[in-house]
Image (spheres, one colour):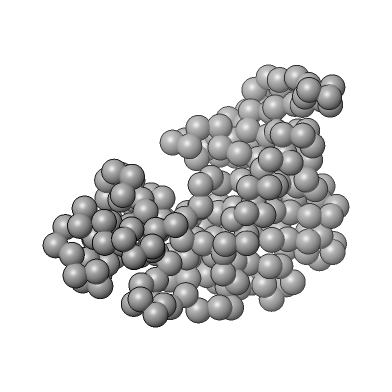
Length: 226
């Protein structure tokens, strides 16, 4: 076993199906294992990319060449981040499907609906865990499908609606209503603190509010925060 890999854990689901977890420690170990899993994919790759780091974009070119279905979810902010946008558009040209969402909960890659790669520690991007087992991975597939349904195809513009708000404005108001700080909101939306302040100011202007609390209350009254 390579030194970068931790001990492989084994367990079973309620129906006796085997479940294995495989920790990956170190950026090289994560990168190599992801490449191996991409190469092993036979039917489908589902990818969630909750940040704009160009070194963490899904490769997937070889999988697409083999006829594997590739669907990738990016943040809306990727539309304004040239390296990420270029990569996403490249995947689409090769036959992949790409959508964007205002917020994404976790980075993950699901291979053939029976293997998933997840963060081992969200604060340490150089670690990951590989989860093997159709039962547990089925829940991640369901999460992906839910996110996918609420996301917009990359080819569709993300403009303002009839209320003068964008999807990012609504997402930010929901985040701030829960009491999160600008720093946390920026991380969840995949944007800078400065962008959060700009979006907040725009939302307050649209709602005619003088504070975040008032803006949240008015948005709720109008039924905007479902």
